[in-house]
Every structure is written in structure tokens, then in C-alpha cells.
Length: 225
Length: 183
Ligand SMILES: [Fe+3]
Image 1: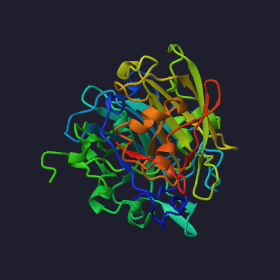
Image 2: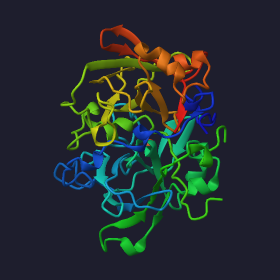
Image 3: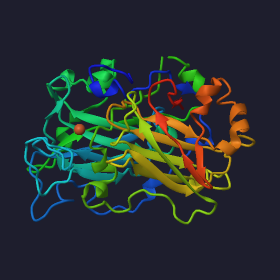
Image 4: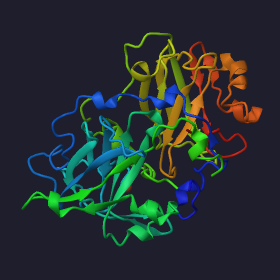
């Protein structure tokens, strides 16, 4: 829901009129080919990509999965950009004043491109929860922000992934802007022991489903629905 | 029912620290390689589109991240389309794109620039269209826009500040709330 008063920032920022539904044109059915961007060898590795002589501190994890569209077709060459707090819950951002310490070996910024089967992989540390000024001191569950470019501009997605078993998930006003519990569940990355790196790294699986191509928009999403 | 279909991953706000992931150089972090940006060699008339995103109290959004996607000067999309990303100024909230004037990507319809807005408090990014004041009559006849009230349609038309220099302010709420699209 655009306006959800429990998340205070939406009160003055959520449009109050309904969205204007139109069919996708050739413009929105195409998109920038950012998957062709040359990436650095450590762009997907947040444990090392800002390191100044040591690895980032924290619980070492892989975050991996597959980018698909609603018809279950893999989306290759999707650019995925991520940002996150460090293990203590602090962002390396000038505007984050949380008292938890910065990690000199961690910037919290990464990116990768999905392969021919839509698969992607990051190596990072599990971010910590952090407090924020909303209804006094609310706490965000541990989360990673993601930005995804699929094949079409109409598929553009910015979201956040959460971690299986985190007791803060149901308490979070940002999570609860999503009214459907099944939809919230689709934002929860699952612990995947088979894909761990033994004696090194746990693994969490998070698949991403982008909006499919729509011939007639009105079939699937009636205006006002 | 959606048998045989997967459900879309829901959107969540980009939050106040969107800059870390999408424009790390803006916060003094080293840029990752190959940051997305406008294609400098695109041919056509150079134009500037500037503006501010205002909240329901009339305050500028200083934390917003914006993206544009448009046809090239010949109206071509796909591999010829033009993409750019910018951040609202941390002090003033102003955004600015330097691009080329798009050609019409739909036969007989007015050209436009698709604009996406991401920020704290915006759960699903906002998708709007920047039209040009020279094409006001075509905009009124655009089949996508005909159903809108004339005042609402007017929120999609930029103001010309000088030759090739346009202003497009976005109002998230209020009497002149910008039209946002579900596409
Ligand atoms: Fe966050």
C-alpha cells in the first residue's frame, strides 16, 4: 500500500490518487542493457570489495538465487545492485548517525549480473538490525536492499530481502506496508545448508520474480484493483 | 487464479541510503566499475530537464533517486534507447538530466521521457512521463492520456525555461498531484 501510516514517511510522500493504468508500449517493454556493463572482479564480493587489509567483520554468507519472470522464464543479464548495513547495523553513509561502529573493511555496496539461466550470487556478511526514528525507536529486521533491472523498464524492481527466522520481521512497519502475508514471505531468504561453503560461509537463497510481459495490461490488473 | 504463474516479488522502499548501492561515489565511497549513466555519443538536440520532487507539505525530497528511459532522437527504443540516473541534490532537492530530445516511439503520438522516482516513504517506485510543451495538442489526443482530466494531464507537461531547457516538478500529493502510471 502506498500510504501506510505505521510507516510515517509515507504520510506526505504517498500519492493519494489511484495510479493511471495504461498498456505497455515498446518503450516500457524494452530497457537499458545494463547487464552488458563491465563489472569489477570483486563487485559481487562485499567481504573484500572495500577491504583495506582485512575481510569485513561478521557472519559470512552467500546470497544467491535466480531471477525469473512471472511466466517462470529465467531473466539473463539482469543487473542487480545491493546495499546494506554492516554486521553491527550501521550504514557507511554520511547521514547514518547510529552509534554502532563502522567497519573500515566494509562499504555495503555490491553488484552483479545474472547469468544465462538468470542465476546470481553475492558474498557478503549478514547485516545487523538497526533502530530508526518511527513511532519512537522502531527496529528494522536484518535486510539487504536490492535494485534489479530486467529486460524491460516495466520490470524495474527495488526491494529488500529479509532472513528466515528473524523475529523482527513481523514487527516492522516497512514490512507491514505489504498487507498479504504470502507476499511478505516472498521477501524472506531461506537458509540453504547444501550450498554453504564448509568452514567458511552460510548460504541464503532468494529468488526474484519480475513482472512478465503483458500484451493487454487490463487482463491481469484491472484498473482500481 | 494464476495457475502456472509465479507471483511477482513485492517492492519495498529504497530507503534513505539508496545512494550507497546506486551511486556510491555520491557519498564519498569508491564507485564500482561501469556505473550506469547516459550514453554520451547519442545524436540529436541536447536538452536539459531539471526539477524538484515535492512532498505533500511542499518540501523538496532531498534523498530521492531518479531514472529516465526514453527513445533516441529518431524514436528508437531497445538497444538505441537512452537511460540515465541521477540523485536529487542533498541540499536543494533539485534533480537534473542532460539528454537528447526524444523522437516519438509510437507513430503519431507525442514523444515522452519515462521518469522513475525512488525514495524513503515510497513503497513502490513512482512511474511518470515527461512531455514537452511544444506538443500540448498531441498530448491531449494521446490515447493513453485522453481519459485524464485536462488539469491532471497538465502535470505531465514540462515548462520551457529557455531553448532546450525544461523544468519538470513532481508533486506527490495536493491539488496538482502528478499523474503516476501503472504500466
Ligand atoms: Fe535499510
